[in-house]
Length: 126
Image 1 (tube, rainbow, N blue to C red):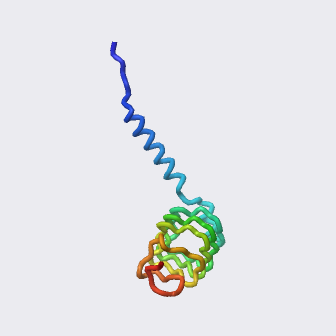
Image 2 (image 1 turned 180 degrees about the vertical axis):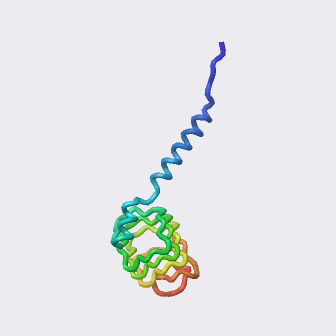
């Protein structure tokens, strides 16, 4: 009598794929928060992780304590925005205008020489 055994690697691989798909879905921006930001410029505490916000006009936006980790803000105008407590880890702020923005902690964000820093100087910003 022959018994069939499944190798543990099949389950491990399948479980890993399911976990990765679920993890990716849970790390995306909240679409309602993205729409609120675009229409009102008021989004304190919003979940904007990995949001596609490139090239938007977000002057004076209220983004206190917003999660912008991994967000694409390439070429976005954030002049005068309140970024106090905002999470900007891996956010793409290349060519963005941050002049006059307050509370921005940019050490873990991506900036370049085309980025205008909060103090008005050219980037990369610290």
